[in-house]
Length: 394
Length: 104
Ligand code: HEM
Ligand code: FES
Image 1 (spheres, each protein chain N blue to C red):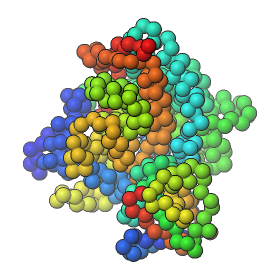
Image 2: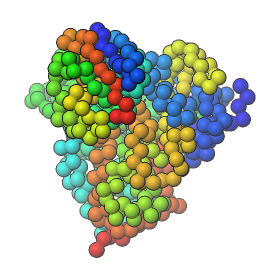
Image 3: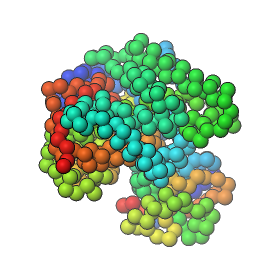
Image 4: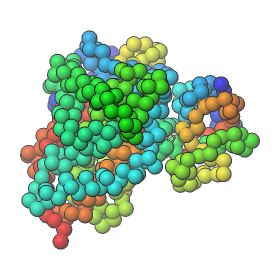
């Protein structure tokens, strides 16, 4: 195929602003084959939704597009297909429904206030380093039932595990070492709990009970710890960072939210649609399938571009406008189908309370754009540093 | 085991469901139109809303408070409304029939 479009999600330049590339793909190459890497990319809303809903044709056995390394990851909910997928997911899903996470609200608010209190008097903070990255990992520690003091270690390892170097299309030694540290950490937690048989009503406690009942293997137990530590923190941090950024960049939207805080739920959905953290997920084709005249073969890898689907003008009117009144309930920012984000209700609650507390404390703020930095990954995008200056409400 | 999904136009589709699987998961895996499953079963999106056939409704375990809250927000809410993702297949549900509710 002689495609006029060139798009490489592994290129840092692409990651800095992938949206023009997404549009070119949607318009000219909706089923795009990367000549450089061999994988396919789907970019239109309808195609992305169809792919994530069709787990039979699009397997989750691979969710990253890099060549597989020797390192075997233990079985994870996110990389399993039915029936294993349901067996694993059902263990945690009931603890993460909106009704189940609602009681955490009070804790989230306390923690948010504790984090903000020392930052407010100075009138400046790094909205990621000082705030957005602390809250989700601390809540994840709480949910898992591991010591809050371990938050920094876990964050360092999970950051290292997902970092990708410019243009490099493999996982690195650093990624593998970070993965091992996370597994070792949960193995240690496991051993400590074996030594102290007091029953614990937290996620690790329930997963250990499931292992004891033979419903999951020990590797699957460790996989859950790994998965939750990874998925439960960096994405939420990035969503919160993006929201703080866009409410500044489109200042009228901040004003609107100040005037009518009941728009907050809608504003969160719009942020996840407009530029949510997760841009791409990988899938493995299980049977030949023809789409827009191209045939994807069994064994081919496909990247589904969630954020491109969210900007598809075939689906949304004025998709490139950030409008906190839009309330898109059908966006792809949390995926969709069997693997749709199981932590979405928790993420929404954390971001809601965090922004409520900011609205409560801050009148106006300014992002120091020249000092912002980004993390690098073809799949999850967001700020690493987001310095802001603000004035308090009187 | 088998359940039947019925489309608004009356078209029926029998779907195999293993015990322990939710009806939303089975519908998605077999490609039942109209069951979008956007939230993957965390009881937040209502895109798996069904009207359970009257005779079968009583065979289902009662809905939890969280599910009822979601259902109560739906335009097409009926007494026999359920979210397919909150129904886990077991022996008692063999042959159950559900109407796919369009537009959540
Ligand atoms: C804004 C925050 C978040 C975003 C944007 C996000 C995004 C996503 C997306 C797009 C998927 C689908 C992956 C796929 O289709 O292959 C996913 C899956 C997942 N997420 Fe999240 N996530 C967020 C927060 C969380 C939180 C807080 C948790 C933990 C409680 C979590 C745990 C998971 C897990 C375990 C899966 C795999 C589910 C499965 O395979 O069945 N996520 N997430
Ligand atoms: S799939 Fe979302 S509520 Fe059932």
